[in-house]
Image 1 (cartoon, rainbow, N blue to C red):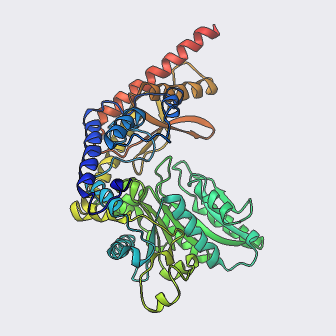
Image 2: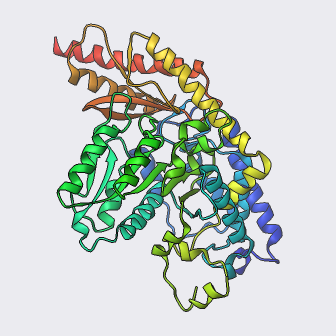
Length: 480
């Protein structure tokens, strides 16, 4: 079994095996004509269930043959221009090269003695991102597994900085369109059930600062403590960006930590044309960025940034076997001192390779393309009498609803839209997302592929309408 260990003796075997794996994936990418095959869980589950994991195949080629059948054949391919579903991006090649390197070397970026240059590369990228945000030299941060962990760590710092002896008094203010991880973080941090105050948004799906001011006033008047205000720069459903300068002023006035969840909108940091949409983010105490969304990086690649690096001490714990206190005095850079994780992948390498090959403008231009595409898609939707679109996009999402002529039952329209999404997914011709707006069923395009065109959007709209009309026709026949 030692022949399977990656080392100097097996280097050639490693090269052959990885090359074969890459060739399998490359072939799939080159020949895939639909984003999905439409396979159901019931159809695929028996194939996987019959595999006996206690009976190894003993050969990577045989294992790859099997993998074709149970995974590659039916994977959902985000690179396809008609994948318009969730916040999943096609990835850039330099990042995939970085992924291959980091997986093989397998550095752990918790301590210097496990990573060496990996630590310094991650720190350089944190400094670069902090500079793009507008932080000064005191800014710092850490790579994380994703936006949920980044938001959790930011709110942990906010809780500790609030210096409140009674956690039941702490309140977090955010918009009704913010990510669910805000509520999840509050629960994990031991805050009360009503700790998160969800504020209604305007028609533009942005936080209302007048409402925020009133709620902050009420919080103080009731003897409670405004722990944090969470603004969103790119809501998951609408891509809306809260008014950051005004929120920053209110957070400062009431002594609340300001966190900006820019997991989606962080691509604007590299945009040659749209960076101004994030004006005010430099006043935030912390910021979440997901490079694996709008920087076109493979999952996972995320970070939490802070304006004052000293606040990261709230995540510090010294273990004698790993990062003893003396290493601080010796100025040994141990990233575990800043992280909620211990063992941690060198995910920063993917972004490093991307910047060194493409540059920031290259990344930002790709994000600009999908934002421009969303604007074109909005024009198509507003001109199409079959659809109602919720809001003009600020980033690259479109939320809309098929509205049949002559049908007034909201419940029937809801079912038709839901059916259309499911039928489209089952066909494999395209993948779209769904959500609820004001209690009603809507559909959503999340546009993160610069290869997607306005013609693709128009074609998918026709497919949706066809499925919805089929559902409506069949049900009207049954009802008559």
